[in-house]
Length: 417
Image 1: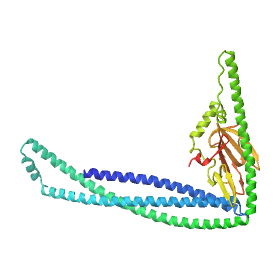
Image 2 (image 1 turned 135 degrees about the vertical axis):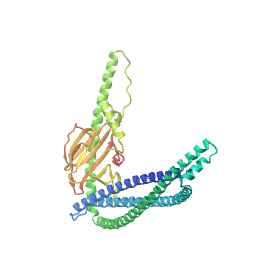
Image 3 (image 1 turned 45 degrees about the horizontal axis):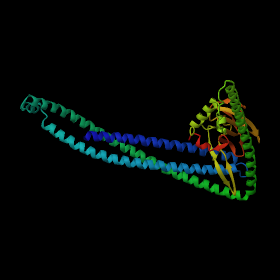
Image 4 (image 1 turned 60 degrees about the vertical axis):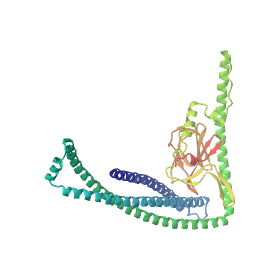
């Protein structure tokens, strides 16, 4: 029973270490991803800060960087907490193993003393010949054999437990060093965060001085986006109308055929925009495929950091709505389709291109492209290049939207985390 208990402790120790390693690796990957985003934002800030006039893009970049730095500190806190739990577990295991080692040593010492008293062959033979019968003699021979085997096993367990203690102490030392490094990293990140918050405060003061200019910039942005939204909605509505007319024509032909054959005319079902857009088997399959990949769609660019999220935002005293997400990427980055589909339209507005792709009743919109490599009606595959992102005052920023019919959806709920 003691040997089984020892084996169970060692097994549970290994399992706990594995689970910890997986959690720690995941936290490390998340932290590295956040650091890449921070570096991308800082690189963009360095490139766009040459202008004397503060831009909305710079403000958004600093806000995004502060948010990411806070997330990074939060992850470091989780890493420290994980290490504290592991240190506590390992300390308890070392104490438990030391207690078992002491018990094993006592048992082994008792066996050695017994073996010393019965070490010569004569004593063993007398022990066997003193048996009352053949069965008892056979059992005593087996006992002597098993005793020798058991003593060897105990010696192996003794040695194994000693090595396990040494290993666990080594792991504890490593845990303590990791914790010390993480605490040092945490302090460095807090200093950086404080510096960036000071930079943010300076920018906010500057905003109040340039409030008139910011209002004008924001009004211009709203007008441009309204024009783009109108173009997108009109294109989608045209697609709905084409699908509606096609469906009505198919119903009319079906009714004529039924009359000609003397059958009852099929009762037309009430249609919606969704049913029109998914009327064909191909469109229905695309819609289902897109929907089934919710939360797993690839990012439209390779390097990315969300500069502005979906929803309502406030700049100074002005409020505006973002119907998608603004993604900061690298200069010359390729913009890729997040799912297979058909190019609904390619349009140039305000010096850059917009590409809209239809996936059944779903649509993905890619704004602020410098060049395009697709045309209206083209069929595209997942991750196929659509063009190259343009770089303006804010840097290389892609505006990305997802729509279901005419309804805007939050892209972050659809793209892979």
